[in-house]
Image (cartoon, rainbow, N blue to C red; front, side):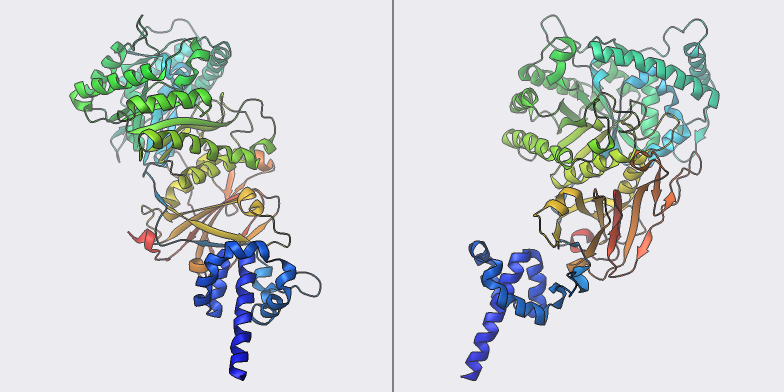
Amino acid sequence: MGGETRRSQRKRRLTATVVFCIQRHKFFCKMLAARAQIAPLLSFWWWLAPILLPFTSSSSHSSSSASYASSSFPTYQKAAGGSRTGFLGRTLVLLDVNTRSPTRILNENFLSLQLDPSIISDGWLVFLSSKRLVTLARGLSPAFLRFGGKRTDFLQFNNQKNLAKYRGPGPDYYLKNYDDDIVHSDIAMDKQNGCKVASHPDIMLELQREKAASTHLILLKEQISNIYSNVTITARSLDKLYNFADCAGLHLILGLNALHRNHDNSWNTSSTLNLLKYSAGKKYNVSWELGNEPNAYRSMVGRTINSTQLAQDYTELRTLLQSVRYYNRAHLYGPNTGRPRRNAILLLDGFMKDAGSVIDAVTWQHYFQDGRVKKVEDFLKTRLLDTLREQITKVSKVVSTHTPGKKLWLGGLGPAWSGGINNLSDTFAAAFLWANTLGMAAVHGIDVVLRHSFFDYGYTHLVDQHFNPLPDYWFSLLFKRLVGPKVLAVRVAGLQRKPQKGRVIWDKLRIYAHCTSYSNHNYMRGSITIYIINLHRSRKKIKLAGTLRNKTVHQYLLQPYGNEGLKAKHVQLNGERLLMLDNETFPEIKPKTLRAGRTIAMPPMTIGFYVVKNMNAYACRR
């Protein structure tokens, strides 16, 4: 009789515990179950939880659960003063990662780059041979380099080494002669890669910045008036562009002019064929793309190209590539539509139906802001960060309908369109958007993200016109060094006095996890990299639990440097300012070691990478 009573009491206590932890968090119910050795009972309660939860209120189980909590889990009890004590009371978020298998495996070139064709007009193309620029680009390799943008559809190839010289004094005159001097002189050779690189005199860089400033005013007027001038890319220009990509270890993707039309609105292939023949003769390893945001042609030039015509154009381009022996297996990407609003989605749907099999990956674009943004706070709105998820869902639905399994590429991505906003989209404030974009794109299966622009164009670039890396560059460098292509599922739970479902965890504290990059020889295979974005205005604590518990962690914490706060254009890593040591040497990227079991403390408005060493994670060993 006494034994039966004891068994009944034990069953009631176990039942109360299960109800208690289910109400708290399902994930941590498993952890509590393992500790209390009640796994057999949990398997029954787990499927019953959705039915049980609507009927379990704090009043209905308070006596039984509270007694069990006080005896076996005292850390849930409040102290006399009202604050929680013990391990869980000090922790806001508990974090674990599924290490059994990756949810996605991305392209090795997941984080890639873009250059805008405006560098031909404003003259910066000549300076792509700079040792410093090549070094900075090489730091982000391996990657794709897409040469494209709004002026892609005004490019005309001219197979000449040199066009007419500029006459008269001024920056153009001196810069043109300087260009000729570079070509006809012995340029310093990069012995490591056999590339043509140069150290450009400060006076020539100053003249170039002066020229670029005046040219950008002209380009801005064209954009406002929607009246664009043709841009000529010469054979020499193409040589410089390919030399830069090749030296930096980037694979070049050339965007072709889709608005070069015949009278019957069919695509005129004459310029493209000349370009293909020249590139093949040089044995340039290039991939191709046709057009830029074809859904916007009506507003740009008053001409419409429907999905049927665009599909025919891509089919013809594939035929052209196959006719040139060197490119018969070259990759072709497209259709590079704009943000997936109604017109863009209709165009993409028709294109994928008719020509989905012609392309190797589907490209589309997304911008977060426009030129009317005036405040730092505009870059920190969580609903702005979440717009990308909605856009990915729309595009994925169209693509999966016609070509299931086709890879998705997010091209031309930047924090703001129309060149960005000075002292905003080029500051630390914009880094939150960039970091969250990479994390969200990876989780939702985007295979490649192309950042617009690596250099020069507007205020959304990674490197400024003095060849100094901006905050987004330093984040990208750490991403490349620490984050591998295997995406892992993150499991988190917040412990708050007044629970607000998902608000703290997902809205303002964003957590992503990957296997650590295999190319980083400081870490053994099986290590895990977690990167966290803290948008709170207060410090948040994160405790590694489950498989991550009691592991040594390397911290790489990025914060703005200087007195400008989030408007800073300089970054510190673990309290040390990041600066290039010279034109060819990066600063030492040193982690801060957190002892095993230590809680991660994220300062407000920061971004951090955390490498969990020697995890021997099954998903990351192979």
